[in-house]
Image: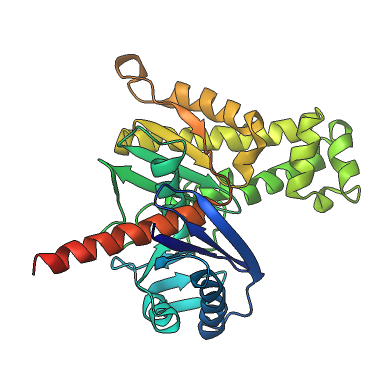
Length: 325
């Protein structure tokens, strides 16, 4: 059986795994991202891939990157955390590994993994929204990943939800992720703690006693322990997410929404307000079939699994085109 390798490149770590054609993660390793230099990152990946090629029959390498990837899934157009711009990553990887390579946006890779092997199995139209530091996502329509004409579809976090709202790193104001992400959860909790200190005892005690000392893990732990301010912060962020899903439903009418990412791992603290708001805001809800909003199943390895499987799909498509020429 031939396997593919999936790679998840982040600003601080590189995760690499061997994935079977059934989506099983057979082996995995992580290393620190060596620098912002693309050549150094590619060399690190090539070393890890070489370790696996000694133990497994590897057919291709798929990479997920937190950034914009062109429509040919070959070039990283812009990756802010890595400070990359127009990096020909597929070519660099193929030269370094001697294997066919495929490059994807990391949220697209995670969405594909959930569609093929996780929460979206059995559907043909699925939207995944990833809630982490920011908000990302992926679109599956009739069983195909929709990348857009330039490869940049699914950047849900930069939908404008508040005119002249909070400034965003993208250069615009009022983007969805400024109200519905992990960063937004922390900001909201700090603001509420400043206004309602008497109800934020647990939350403040987990940090340094000040609203400025509140971090993401503190908000989740405090909410689990019943802190009212932390619970309100989750309610606000979940409400923003539910409203955004209602807008996406008007655009795509999916069979299911899958919610993933680090913040989504808080479970019902976030999923309850998302579902309640979505059910209220969904246009034409009395006249349409319900759209389930469910949690992702694969967790952190989704990016690796999805990137590996998309590399397999691309390889098969290329082989098919070669056979027809």
